[in-house]
Length: 465
Image (cartoon, rainbow, N blue to C red; front, side, top):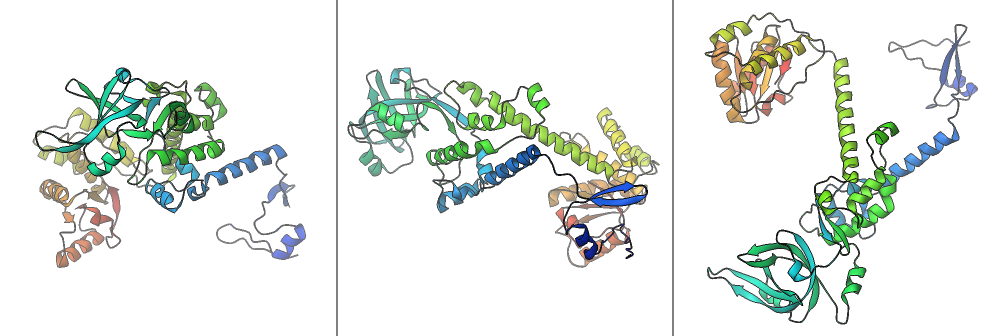
């Protein structure tokens, strides 16, 4: 009978011939039970087929969501490169590129019905189009379009007039989209979108032929240079139709029911391609059931992640500081003012955290001039009282120098050594500063990002600000 020794980490290595005899292989899951003082190894019971089916389905959905956007119909190398600029590399990335606004294009309006300040869609015929110069000498291209209810001026301020005149020929008919603005008492649209009717084509055929753009509430996405709404909508249409069913939430059913949330895949479809009964105002204010479901899911898991991080922090080993007031009380006597109630409250909470055996992660928020720096200095002195060093990192060299001047002046009277470490400290002075930090001679280090470089070593760092 072979003897097996438990190593220093508490691990037990079973010889391969014994594993083989038991029918186990490397990587297998083993059930260990104590039976009458003996350890009995056996295979764990197989999960029910229903559980395996759910796990398999979830694995397939995850694989679908990880599909490269390059494999979506209509996405070539150039489109994939443009989408990558928006952080879209997979199908899941595309689903989470949510619209930032919507336009009601469920019906075409007559020109007399167009509302200033609103995005409108209407059909009209080009009456006149030509380059125009203002009294101030500014050139732009202007077109007059009309229907049986009236006329409307369209303008472009950055364009090639010769190219535009070749396109905007009198008699051409199309569907125009844009925001109506007032210029004096006249309604205008600047840089409108247009879909031209082909010769002999009627309006209904054009609308029915592009259901993504007309006859519905149309969504608009954040873009990047070279990426256009029309092409992006077609890509998202493919993604939503074929892959939205693969995305799922891990919210507990009880939470979903209590909060009256809709199915996750349905929420994505409704946000990307809302139905004709959707309220454009609610869509633009993100107050629909679909938006509420997605927002709740995101905030729920954000809070869960923060709670898990906080729990993990509570398990870490920190430095429990003793509150002796050796330096904090003398500093308060040096100040020409008294601390505010808010400062005292924050300091009380910081003292409580620093006295704990768990590491402190705290955000101090306040307006400019509210006294955050003195709170930081008093916290640093608590660390110094416990023979620990403090690093105070400022975002800029100028701010670091200002903090150093303020803190150095006060700490010098307390017999505490402060140094400045930034890119401006070079040569022998830098070497001497690094040595003083490493030896513990310096108790408070005011620095820029230079303090987090590998070459900077502390004797006993107790607080980072």
